[in-house]
Length: 246
Image (cartoon, rainbow, N blue to C red; front, side, top):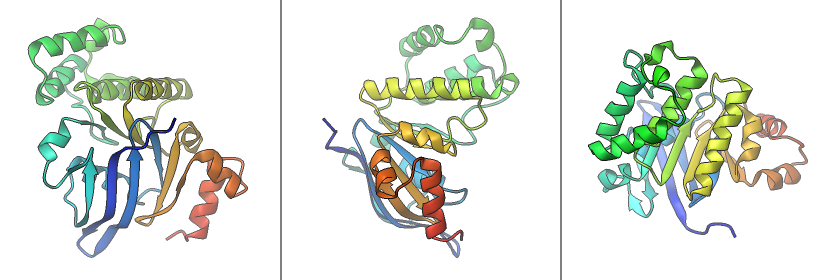
């Protein structure tokens, strides 16, 4: 049975930077317990939209509801429900893995016992030697793994992953998606951006944004059938071409 309630609702959302309109009155919803793949070329508005959902960017106009709460009025409550893995900044490179976990655990509101419990859990995935290493010395795949663990520290209900598999090898990408599926099985809601278009076929639904507008959304199999395409990559090329490159 498909989930019916919405974890995130976006209504007529607009973001303007000076004279540039980055997001142009978009509307979409993310259902509770689903994986929504958010696709688009560089500069299409994906990260800007996610940052407005998390409260990192102010909304120019429109509204965002997270579990029914208006994020312009109830951001303090919403932050307790959301985990965000940033495309660029997720960890402090000069701190060790352990120091990053302690720092982000603290600002997430974990008490000492909760943080100890988290280290016990993380210890099953990361060695003591790795915990002592500085983040800047980690391979890209391990760095992304640590960033995901940090994102999950407060056990968020809704998880926003901005390019989580960027720069990692195929084996690590599969590991990431195994973790994403595990999160879904635990009733988490996930919004995932990716440039690896084959990954979009792992999502319950996909949404394509181009030049600040949502140009297509739906279940992958249905979209492929409706548009007579055999892969999300070919569908993506078709949609972007139909709506112009600029």
